[in-house]
Length: 304
Ligand code: SF4
Ligand code: SF4
Image (tube, rainbow, N blue to C red; front, side, top):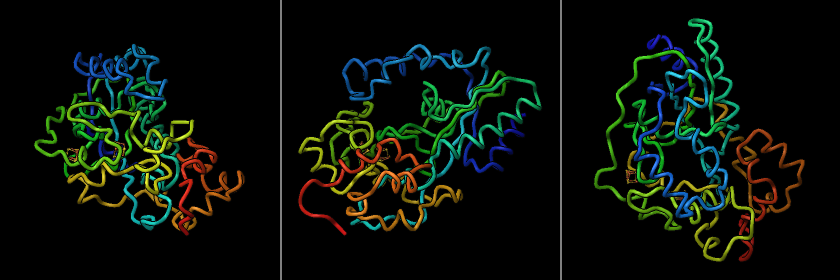
């Protein structure tokens, strides 16, 4: 089954698949997360405070869970926005990954159920699960100082998903690589949200502030944002592991021509109907039209 599941994952378009024993997360990871909350570094993401018991133990997500199957899918786009355009993070270029991944993960889960009779639960950012921790445990890669999962030789432009199952599978070796001496992302972060061996400070991270935060943006945030209107890729762009990133093979993740030609003025004058047509099946929905318009530069004229 170990081989069959990996083979099917590959056929379904996943770029990596690995297995970890479903058990409580280790004490270091638990304490690191707790400190992140205690220090308030999760910022406006109050959901991070909930279900900590479940986040610490995937067995609480599925009764009798034995294995966490971790999956990764490349989203690095072939075509990019012009640099002067209002910038979106690469992961938001195409169709919502929750939809794309869920469909394929369910097919994998159905296969496991049909072959073994075991239970499964698919999690694609839909349950309190530490995806990057489990991906490291399952041998997919290591967590870099930019807080992203880095797949050796492939980089970090990958979505992660998990299938938790009651099926026992031989676990893969955890990945033991690290960033070594590199500190490029800490230096490159325009908002100083990264520090050595610390989880990201979401109160400063532009990804959080442009997507999750609902209030008015302060002046320092606007200055750090530049022309970003949804998310930020700076700590991935500068990472040497992404210098050889290969474009995704998933057509759903490629941007439309309309998206690539978006200007500030298009967003400023966008109607709800236009937003729904362009972003109705996109991660950009999360910030809503008002959020996207808030993120446009408030002064200095429009970039066409
Ligand atoms: S996403 Fe941007 S703001 Fe957030 S840590 Fe990375 S570089 Fe800094
Ligand atoms: S830029 Fe360097 S320090 Fe940051 S995640 Fe990549 S390898 Fe690690």
